[in-house]
Length: 101
Image (tube, one colour):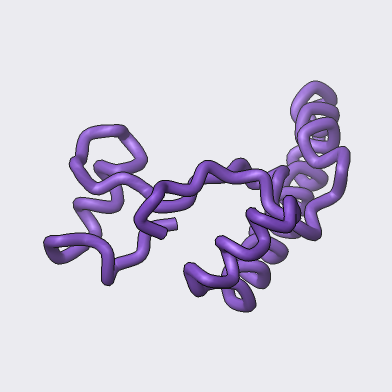
């Protein structure tokens, strides 16, 4: 998660693309793995692994769509820094939170 109000420059599409490649000075303010997002199935990585190993493309697509839907829903409801900080402090979100959040 990058909070645009904490960044000194404009965040463009290229800046975001480069952030995923590790080629930018803009780094996430909150970082967590999708399987640590509240509401994700406990066996998400196992589901993905099984679908890949068995060549089940449709199942893999469905698992990924469901995970992305849950992630976007979580982000829509918990986007504020205060919400994220509170969830982190209550141990409801396993994340790396930088001090400025």
